[in-house]
Image (cartoon, rainbow, N blue to C red; front, top):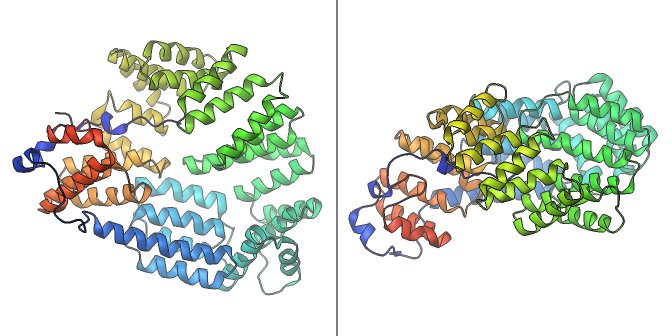
Length: 506
């Protein structure tokens, strides 16, 4: 979904002129030395972490798991305290079955708004019912690597069945089921996933595999029943909500009777797996044969193009879907979003109101409010936001948009958004800006580290970094950071020279 520029929302009323000397503002911003980098410490740290992690992950994928484990452990011990990085890698360790390493990372987290939701979701989705020994963790992780990455499902499953090296556990049964599933032995896959679930019936990863096994076995009603059970489990974070949605789309792909619907759900599944190019190919092929469900095909194509920042194609396909079926929710919502983004607020309001009638989802209501605000009807917008916030306290888009009319809640709402969407870069930048306003430059630097890790070429990162550097007295590096900001976004340079920032006001 398209992210609104949060930093406009939470404008803090001081200017770039407060941070740049008169001499700097008047003279062209030029580098004194080409070798100086304003954020060299962050560059070194970021390069170290990413290189070390890439090496460890490569070894894991190649089934050199013991060496990979040692590399991951070494990285954890040497990494500076950073909740964002710890959470990011903690989730990956849990996915790989390296649960003790995931626990180490969890234990090092601060107990704050950002971490609690992710830790809960991670454990609900991945964790076995009881702790495993380090020996078993490494051995079973090796099995996982061979099954998933090295096309050795049959051999590995046989080894797991015949080996007494590992203690019996729900996780071992899960891996045997996964091995049989990858080998297309669905009856035995079902047997062993049931064994795993008997020992641990709250693990959503196990239930997800069972739903896929049943769907592939053409046991449609049973697959849909398990899917219903999965969807009853609440997940707060967008990452794990998306995992559940991906399982749903896969099951619907397998259980749908119409070929067009199968293509629709398969494409949606690919899209959720970050394979949007493959998704569009499936849909474009389906268009040639789809008749009854052509509006659904067009609407999903439009949405995928919209979420991949191709508004012209998005509008084209959404319009086709809408012409065929003006009650198609996805098409209506996409047209509303495209019109809003192109500042056609009367049209966006119309489409959001139509979309609201087609769903119980909150998105059209948020869209109505932000359209009213853009049309300078702030009282109507505020009334809608306040009503929605009573029952949707963790909705990311609502929290972000509502700050336009409730800016004094920034210190309360921004951490909530970070707690459900760790990779929303605008949130970290917004938190950094708020910390700068409070004079908490150490915390601002932490937030900026997270932003840099997500996107090292974000011009706003360099702007806020310049404020932190100047507050520390590093004026030359602050100037260089501003130069980098202007290099990335040429339109921003003139505004900086004039002492104006769209994020701070003038």
